[in-house]
Image (cartoon, rainbow, N blue to C red; front, top):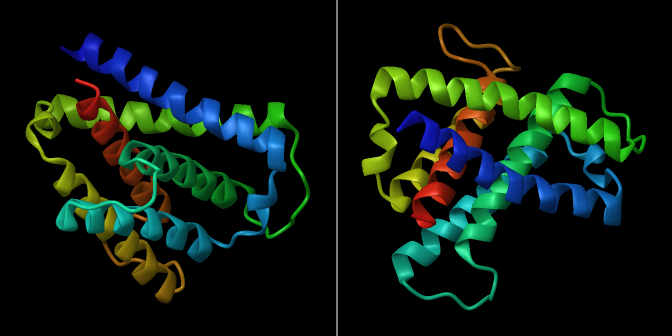
Length: 179
């Protein structure tokens, strides 16, 4: 099962990264102006839209929910890249550099997924799309609280760990939607 999961994970990420790189070519790295709270708010908007559509069973804008989950993956990566760069410079980054940074963060996210799958036995395969949206929203609220605490936690994981979990929950939603 793990080999299939790895393949499905890579396929989902490839579709997200393709969008990310094309948008980088179109817009450059305009997202470099985002502070962490802005990235978190972008994820919140997307997850909140998913939840609203799930609850109302009605959608008025054509963008499908899978594109929102892909956007969540990409904003999660943006958040991690911004944390890595640790400055608010707005310099435009070269596409090759951005691609390497994207891939570096996805390697870590995938390893985390594999480790958790080992311990939890791929329990996520039995979860609902609604749960993924809720878990992403909870992680967003956790990051907001950590930011309110000036980045300090007493015993909890930091902002980066929450971004990795957000990425993986969104990838799980993409995998299950394509099964």
